[in-house]
Length: 165
Image 1 (cartoon, rainbow, N blue to C red):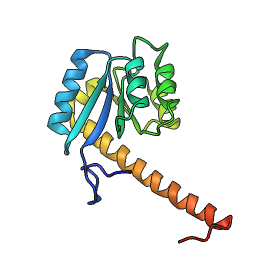
Image 2 (image 1 turned 90 degrees about the horizontal axis):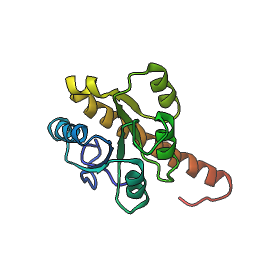
Image 3 (image 1 turned 60 degrees about the horizontal axis):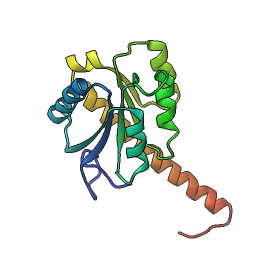
Image 4 (image 1 turned 135 degrees about the vertical axis):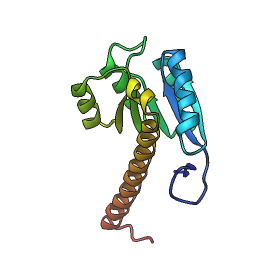
């Protein structure tokens, strides 16, 4: 995984690539401005208005580091369907939910099932730095998870007889 510019690591830094899945053009515009003004690194934002566009982007060769996901999309049944469809795409990318929903049970369920963070849009508009914190922490957790998975795979390989260093 190539490091993004916000990472604490120094090698091969590049802009952070964000997929913003938001059906409201107005909200998307506001979020892009918030990202530009409050994200502490260079980032590129790919915007998808619906699940079909998001799936096309995620199935393409476009490099996406993190997904900002609105749960209320016109081409999904409900919030859970939206998340399940994103998670069904084979690429493993951290997801931060950024939605108008304020359902604590839904937020807890999604976090328990793989969402990195759940942010209410109204709260984010009042405290735009919250978006940066969620993105930064999500990326750090994801990088740590990838590293641990690599270490685990090396141990398993070693235990199965693969003694290469």
